[in-house]
Length: 154
Image (cartoon, rainbow, N blue to C red; front, side, top):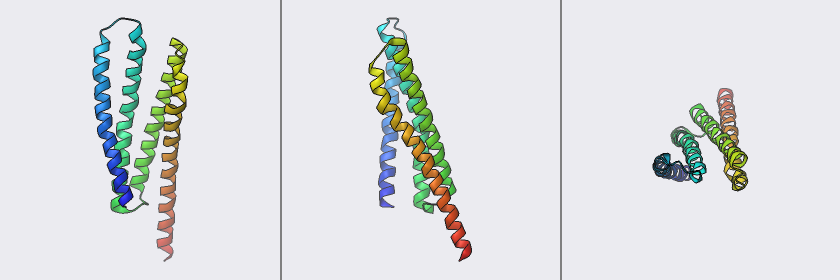
């Protein structure tokens, strides 16, 4: 349980960092909104995509913290934690899809080749994390089922 508490503290720190990061990006987006120069178009789209992606991470991180709290209080195998982790996986998967769409838009419309470098890390990692969280939720539900079945036979 000590490792779960440390992990929960790291996730809470990530939530605070996201709040600061998204606030900074919103302020920068507001400053760029009134400009009409072409060189700011990519920056405008990037800031919008960054904010949209990270707004999806807020509820995902909060769901993970709530699931960790349930792990600490009720043990590993409970349906509340599994549901929270599954929803967090879906939100992170949606964030990855937004990132993929953004990257292809930047590459296709603006012929920005740097977007292809971004595609590898910033899309594949959340895709794997989202799917991994959904698989973890299935493991938790299966473990709960086996635990309940074992308690019935005893």
